[in-house]
Length: 453
Image (tube, rainbow, N blue to C red):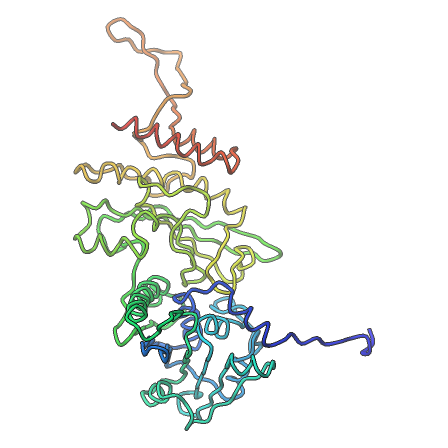
């Protein structure tokens, strides 16, 4: 095609940049997205500061990573940055996170960095008010003497890259941003951020992330402790048999690692405080289900991804699902890393693998508080085999041997196989439509309750 037939159409900056503010970020997920960049830069320490000052409130994320030269920083400020190719272990993907996460919360984004922590400081800023007036994709350079005080202070403290959010219009959407209601909201938001970061980056904070340095995150000066969804330090937590499930999608192949856990009944926790902490940010019932990791970074915390409904009797079941970034398209990861969909081929495997996990969680819930020891599942349970001695065993078909035993003269059949309610339930769920599955779940819950009264 000749060049005269090609026409470059540059989107209106003032219109598109406002649309890009609405990609679905929450405040806590926006902070987490910036910490992803710090981890990619090799940082071992990240300092997050959320400062309430009325209409002049600000948020700062600073790290001791590798830093950037002026050219690298300017490219990193580009929407859809092409400064590097993303590897299989990278936490980034689209080249949008720094900008879209930040501008979803503020009107002015300023980033300062120095390569290796020793080079010259370079600083650039996106300013929505300037873009609205000029209607140009223009990033502003900021001289060192003109840097805001929070950035200057962080650089003096030895940080290598500093991100500053100002004009927090999406955070402080109050008629009186200097008022008590706004102050209390920022305080609450800070607590939510602490809980979120402790959960999302728990493997990094605990030094468990593969090929990564152990990470320390400080929030307003306080070190964030990792929150382990699986309570692996509790003696009564049970780790069930893990599996690897191969997945292929549009020419990409990889494995999804299935790692199920059953947490202890409340009475079996080491302490009341330990039980309360294990409840998580959304508390026990909502924290049951899948914990989906992209690499070692948590994407989804709880819920059964429309495979099951939340159930009080199964709230002790938590399952880690881990996959690598090359399966992003299979899981339909979005820019904000807040949404994930389970591939259809994975769901078919999970239906079977979940049966012994749900049985074990149900048993722990019902028997844990009675002082009885719940039956232990097999170290390597077969996907379709429920635990032995299930309370919900009910014969739907029996195999009777030709030989019979006699008791007081009456012949008794020798039963060699049984079907449990869970087996029947899972078979029905396999053929049921989406609108029928909740009905089946409720029906079998009633049957199970009735059999254990």
